[in-house]
Amino acid sequence: MDKVFISGLSIQTTIGFYQWEKEIKQTLVFDLELGWDIKPAALNDELDKTLDYAAISVDIERFANANPVDLLETLAERLATHLMDTYHITWLKIKLHKPNAVHNATSVGVEIERSKAVC
Image (cartoon, rainbow, N blue to C red; front, side, top):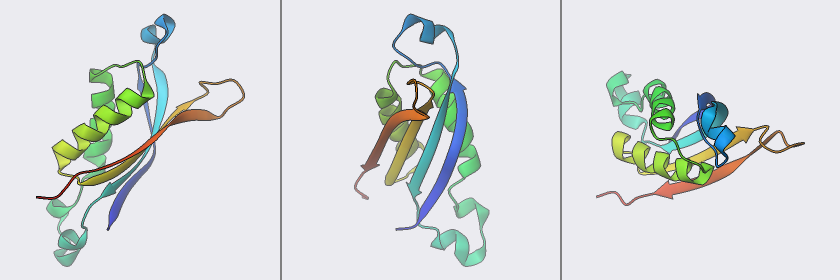
């Protein structure tokens, strides 16, 4: 399986369980691997057959800000569903970091891998 990746995508959004977290923006960092057959794009050097990682990067920030949640787990799960449905991705891995959320840790977070059957 070919993969397109986005690494270290940093966004500002509202996330967290505590009331003070709901009143501020915090940094989240995303690492994504997206299953995508790159052969059709590579065959004739065709941009319109690629998975547009620039558009996906913008979409991730828009999605997170339009859908505030308490938990990283919830955001990762909902984002995975959104990306798979919107971009027709059949497999992805999302690693979601919340830097400096825990004293003495560089980052905490979740990692999920999702797939769906190709019809």
